[in-house]
Image 1 (cartoon, rainbow, N blue to C red):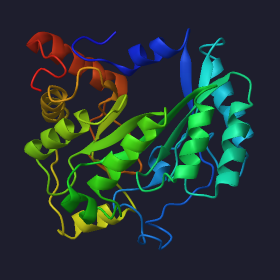
Image 2 (image 1 turned 60 degrees about the vertical axis):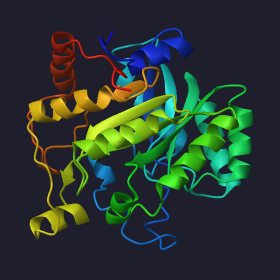
Image 3 (image 1 turned 30 degrees about the horizontal axis):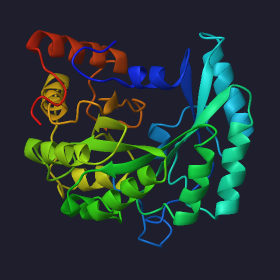
Length: 304
């Protein structure tokens, strides 16, 4: 159990008995900032290969992806329950009949006890939200919004195609409908510093969110960001692991104390990663961060 902050494991234990594991799913969605609806090229940092597990492949069905995911995790925890995690790209960006078919296919698999749907705050139509509201009455449902930052200047620079106002609207409508939601934030986006990260944390804390994910900006080969960085078009912070921990500890103190923190760090495959290359596993990083929390007596939300 984490010391000094409300961790995601504790959040899950409030909703489920026993072990629960996410199974990532790639259902072949696109994004409106890729297909021309909002823009082209997607977010400048995005390469979905950097976080999709090997079993997550669009050439096989949702049911098959879940089966392969269960085989992967069941070796260690045979009694595990699962959350179907629609992860890649924008997982509400299709007609509602198609979305219902995919979500229901996932929920019909043995051992699946809920859904987590990753999407954008400008891709949550009212008719879909009405369906998710009904679904949440019979199973666990969470919508995870890619927020990244609260600063519109940065959202424009990274080609997100939505605004902070879109985030506020989507989160409020989602929670008012009876569906829980979380937010995903990136620390280290171009042009931002610690004061900007703290401002985002404070704004996030004013929204009725249940969870938040933090991770460091990673420069991935083959992305527009990697090209911009190589060409000197943007300046980026090249933190050491300990410097990034310093930032996480500052941000944590400005996050609402009942907001479950799912993670602080992410790890892309070494062959895709330009930087940062810290040479440690996620659990090693978290252990180091927890030691700092205990040593320095830092408490989530203490600066709010």
